[in-house]
Image (cartoon, rainbow, N blue to C red; front, side, top):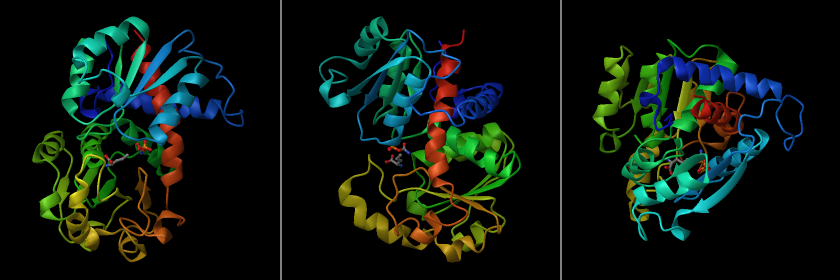
Length: 308
Ligand code: CP
Ligand code: NVA
């Protein structure tokens, strides 16, 4: 079964093929109406379940549109309206859904839910974000970087802010795609050490630098994300803001990166908190290209999942 659970669990050659395939899929649609079918229809006669235990705009719409463009049909399910994990075990839901659908995408809280789904489903399962990782996002980000700035291997990516789930998938990608990664943020919000150790073991440089100005020197890409993720307690908001204020990505900070350094944010953004409007809407911002590329990258991921 070809699940897409995380970037570090997917073979390097497969990841590279997915990025290249995403580019081909994107180019083939150039100028075509968004509702028109692709020429290649790998999801023809396929039914896809899209399960959300958390809110979503990009993941929900890009998966739904992508499936339809590839000839398939979708059903979007909210976790709270299903029996998932409360009315029955996740394993039982996985077994039942596998009798109805050909592919499952799930956005959930605990990684354990994703893993139990994958262990028990007899159809491919795709990780649409957990508290720990967000691999589809970073596949879109790699596609976006390479479209604008060429191969990401050997480049320097700097993450400024919370060491969260999106950072974790960047750390997985650093090891698999061979780029260097610097984290800058307060020690209290450091990423899990395991993500850093694993990337380092694959031979890439991963650094922690508390001074954001020093961190971004030589950066080809500067990335941030919301200071309060969907799984974080709302009561932690003020404390997190106080800790993270100094790591805001603004024009001053970007001026210390390479002149042509790109800026990325997975969105949704809290404008003028983690990143200023000037950076979000500036000439080096790739935030809306990232959002578009979710569609193309995920089509390549789904195609890969269904290839025997
Ligand atoms: N970036 C991202 O996953 O956005 P959504 O939460 O809107 O899906
Ligand atoms: N870190 C964010 C990403 C949202 C796409 C969250 O988990 O809420």
